[in-house]
Image 1 (cartoon, rainbow, N blue to C red):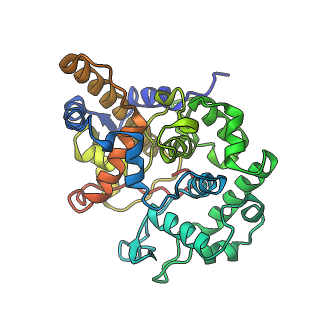
Image 2 (cartoon, rainbow, N blue to C red):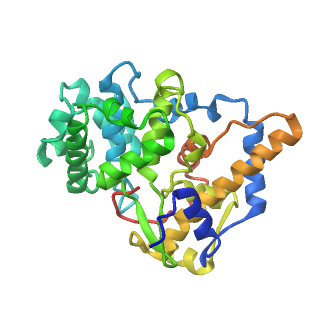
Length: 339
């Protein structure tokens, strides 16, 4: 039996066989040029992570790193069934939607004295307790509460078995990004984001990779967060970044797929088209990174240190900020625990 392909190889494999999603080199060049002009800005550094995660606590304790674990373990499926029914959480005068609703809810719970970042607590909490933590302001609940409860309990029990904190758990992998992802996927089943495509077992490991990248980002790549092999990570294949890649022309959807998505038809996890969107997104960002590094080398005679995770850290908030300009490009909808 052939070994499972890791995310980068999975992206290349899918992009070479895709029938409904295509990586477009002209768009790849356009994004690389845009990022080239931003190459010295904080947006393309580990510090830029803080801009996309303004609610993250300072990394001064195990509790802060457990915050990252709790949030990333439940970091999936925020899109509403109807655009008018967004789950909202207001924290310190700011109303948040999407992923930031989760961040706001966890931070709010900590301030209210709920030990939501303590594995002893969240490995045993009831679904009603989690429902209260994740309560919205407007009566629209966060989707998939039962699933979020299940994966949080599972994750908490694993941390309990490995020293009682995310820091102690992840230290078993050293400071190596690949080993960290492998450890997370091996020990915590909900992070095992895999599929079968054209007869091959492939992987995306979106949440496992983002957990490592968020650990690196919250530590601002210093000291304990100075992880080797960060280039091993790919972008984090979700539903927001593909939209911005299509917007810039680095990805193209077939007319048939565009018609399906415009009709609002949901794609099940593992559907060929869903796999192609995610796989080609990974490969598109790989091509963007390669082109960007070539531009830096040719024009500046320098080595490029920008990796796919940092490119994702830039593209995701860009998509969020410019969502009105991209409204004509449909987001694919897949209700699952992987993204």
